[in-house]
Each structure stands twice: as structure tokens, then as C-alpha cells.
Length: 226
Image (cartoon, rainbow, N blue to C red; front, side, top):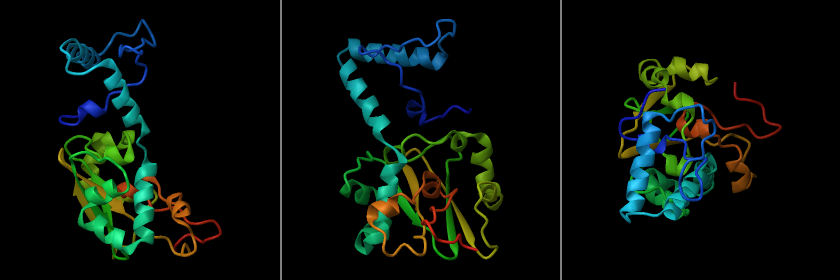
């Protein structure tokens, strides 16, 4: 897996920390990697200098672990049911997400809308920049060199491999995330969902359709689009 250049601090597995902040060794025969040693050294130095505490670090880890695609699904469902919120989301996705109580930090978040003739796909060609504060950790495939390069060169083929077969008439727009700017896709609301509640709609929204590599689930009893 490629190493991130400017987003790597969020990619390490922070699970397995003791209450003092020290990592439990799952296998004493497995040596720590260079980046694990660096993380331990920097963390212990920050605690020693009084910059932070083990409790604050544990609290941030818990906060990061609480983020999941369910947050993004809730934002999408709100946009599907509230035209005014949808307008605010497309104008400033960061402010709209904060309006729902999701702390996305200082990054510039942009929502792009799928329509009848346009499909949006999100990638980070440099490393693995991803709206983690809203969707949690990125899937492993999002960080691979194959996805990062092919999503730009041949997005239609990549989408087909994910099971998203689009008509030739559909325009595919690829959006490249950066360290300071992230994207989310606002997928088209499935037909036949007019009577569904916001929570029911959120259950149709997958992580992949917020990235653009998937489509919302169809409601039970509905036929898949032809």
C-alpha cells in the first residue's frame, strides 16, 4: 500500500493502545515498523513536554473511531428531503455538515451532485485524501495506486468494475481531492422513495455512492433501474 505524503497521520491503526497511550504488542515477534516507532517517539515527546496528555490522545482516537459513513448518509438523506438544505450543501458542504452537528474540521468540503446525465467520481491522485471527518476511514482500495491512476485515465472502466454501468451519454466527472479540499458525491435519490422517512432514506446510502463508485440501494420491492 502506498504511503501517504500529506495525510498519513490519519492512516495508522491507533487501536490497541494502553490507557497510558502506549501500544499493546499483539505479537512480540513482530518488530515495530519505522512509522510506528516514529509515532510512539513523537507521542511520548509531546506528552513529556506537556503539549498534550495520554487522555487527550485517547479522546481523539475515540472521536476518530466514532466517524463512519453513516454520518455522510445522514447528510445525503437530509438533502434528499429538504430542498433548502440541499441548496446550502451544494453551496458550502462544510457549513451544511456542521449545521447537522458533524465537525469536519478546517478542510474545504465540496458536494457534487449526480444528475440524469452526469455522474461524479472522487479520487486522490497524490495519496489518499478523503473526507474522514464525515465518512470515517477510507476503504483500502481507495488508497491503492491502481485506483488513484485508473480513476482518472479510465473512469468508466473503473466504475464498471464496481458494478456501475453507465450509458455512453452519461458524462463522468472526476474530482481530485487535495490536502485542503475534499469532495463528497450527492447521489440521485432513487425512484419510488417518496413516502420514505429521512432515516429510511439514509439506510439506502452507501459509502461507495458518496465516493461515486456506487449507487444508492434500491428500496425493497423496487426494480433495479434498466
